[in-house]
Image 1 (cartoon, rainbow, N blue to C red):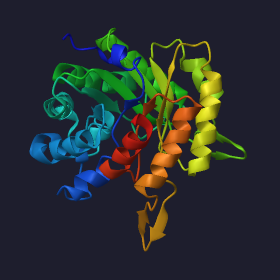
Image 2 (image 1 turned 60 degrees about the horizontal axis):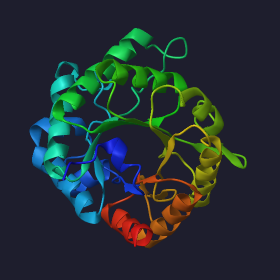
Image 3 (image 1 turned 90 degrees about the vertical axis):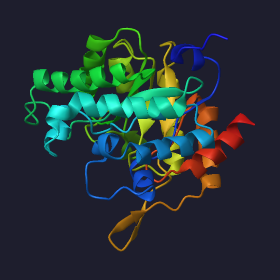
Image 4 (image 1 turned 180 degrees about the vertical axis):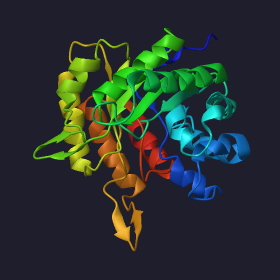
Amino acid sequence: MTRWTLNERIGQGVFFLDGAMGTQLFAAGAAPGGCNERLNLDSPQIVQAVHRRYLDAGSDAVITNTFGGNALSLRRHGLEEKTFEINQAGAKIARQAAGNERYVLGDIGPCGDFLEPLGTVKEVELAAAFAGQAEGLADGGVDGFIIETMTALEETLVAIGAIRSITEELPIFASLAYDPAGESARTMMGVSPAEAVRRLADAGITAIGFNCGTLDMPGYVRLAGAYAEAIVETGLLLLAEPNAGRPELDGDKAVYTLSPDGFAETLAEIAAAGAGILGGCCGTTPEHIAAAVQKIKT
């Protein structure tokens, strides 16, 4: 049987992504405090073990260990010259874990600074950093891209353009991080769901939505409803990767205490609001994803 492309598959019903990567890398043996993306070169077995746990939990796709894999972020670790190699390796590790039956999304996160004049990054420099990352991910065999945890639409648009300079065919998911703003939600840069959809709908993406942020679980459900209303007639799919609730402080450590069943209950509400691409962000584990898959797909 011919394998569906990612675009074909996400049109066939609920599509599950994975959950948190960083905490799972530490649980699998990675030392905290380093560059997680370097593990793609130095300890690929650790990264692949995390991917396999999520696939065993029922994820339809895994996201590459490349969130901070752009050249500007890697420069802070002295790894800028290894941008292509790190991203190519991250894609190959995920591809090997997923095989041909599941899918791989190349992860692109924010650069950690702002575009001029708010920050120090020039647009041409940012575009080159994201294009170099996308080139490595595409060469490594990803099925599509996910731009995550964005707060500024300008940076998101640069990332989309950079990916499109490498490939016109592979789908792009765009995800922003939201904080409470009265009864609604905004990104740190003040972007509402309606504005995000208005600015990004015609930019060459397939899905839009949210991940991370500082909302509580009812807040994520309301955010999903706002996005579902905004994407009507755009043809976009809705993506949702909430955290496992708000963290609680245990000494100087943030701890997420929402149970897998509690997470699954909320994700089912988010799915009912219209989200068809589902996963988890901070604090979520393979157990959280497994509980959600069981509740929503059965």
